[in-house]
Amino acid sequence: MRLNVLALAFMAAALGGSLLIGSALAARPNILIIVGDDMGYADIGVHGCKDIPTPHIDSLAASGVRCTSGYVSGPYCSPTRAGLMTGRYQQRFGHEFNPGPNPMGDIGLPLTEVTLADRLKAAGYKTGMVGKWHLGDAEKFHPVNRGFAEYYGFLGGARSFFPITPNVPPVGGRMYRNLEVLPENEPYTTDTFAREATAFIDRHAKDEWFLYLTFNAVHTPMHATEKYLSRFKNVEPEGRRTYCAMMSAMDDAIGAVLARLDESKLTENTLIFFVSDNGGPPVNSSSNGVLRGNKAQTWEGGIRVPYLVQWKGRIPAGKTYDNPVIQLDFHPTALSAAGVEAKDAKFDGVNLLPHLEGKVTMPPHDTLYWRFGDQMAIRHGNLKLVQGRGADRRMLFDLAADIGEQKDLAAERPDAVKDLTARYDAWNATLEQPRWGQPNRALGTFKNKAKAGGKKKKAKAVD
Image 1 (cartoon, one colour):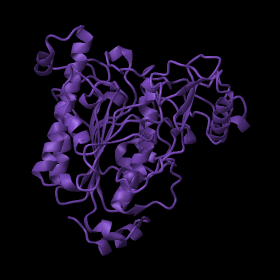
Image 2 (cartoon, helix red, strand yellow):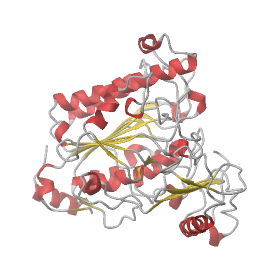
Image 3 (cartoon, helix red, strand yellow):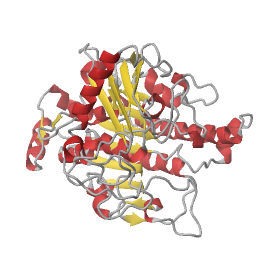
């Protein structure tokens, strides 16, 4: 049941948390975070997509704020999720790469990190997750041991959208309900995740809840049902047709969740975030539009993503917000909305509410940073310094005039290159070495302890 302010404060104190007491606690919002997987930046209607209707995703922009410079902190699945769950650059705790197809042992989101689910659960929220985890397969990393009281989904980075028979899938591909492995009898994961998400909302309609809904659409394998393929029978080539069908299925699934909020009269009191975990890769026929590059790259096409925030009655509807934001902001924003104070946290994300409400005009971030193996990027204002995979030099772009990163200004503006390099190097010196995966060969980042920051760890070749 929904608790009064004094009861919430008492519960938080008993559980080691703390609450900000104020009028906002009179009706603490539900928190819903929706994550798409490997989506192309240009593949939703509000970003100009013509061949895939996405009315339900678009409705979040119509009823909320579309962040035109929305980023993720990694161009790859697992690192982005680690950053989202912690509100911190994942390189600070060595989670720079994917953990591999069957990670066990100590390969997963470090237990030293406190998740958003941990904090909200301690504050009295009912916490649930539906979908792809990808933060470690070992039981100690399992969602039910990282703050989620309820879990339905799979632990790895990818699996079939259809039942896997007769072979038993690997650990990360098995479907779980909490710690129980389920039989392979569900028809299509996107539909199943919608069912489980709406069921969670039904169970907790009178509670304050946090739901983390993470689709494996539109990640490979490219699986779609005939129901959705038939909507795009004239789309060519076949790969794009299947991608369209998978996107349409996910949009319908999101629509089912939004409809359940409406039916339960919870929409006005639910803070909703929507993001893709990284840019689209060529392998799934996605489109990043005018953006250069794709998944696994620090070009805009790998890190700039659809980024929508809705809280009806609190955040203005139908607005765009152009200052750079990042998925790291979800964590402190959700805590602020819930009235939960995290005094121990060292967030890189910030509370976006005053910015999205128009109460604060200054940008939420002075500078954003990326490090991914031998690639790097830094955005300071509208200037971006980037070094691509295997490149021997860094390039400079003015994103306000050149969102497609076509005109390198490095030779014309050496002072800007020097300034951004110094900022990046200072940030980079605070980071850990990767706990697993690839070394930073081109940048030489990990050649000495002083450069890398943190303790030296042996990398495991499992990426």
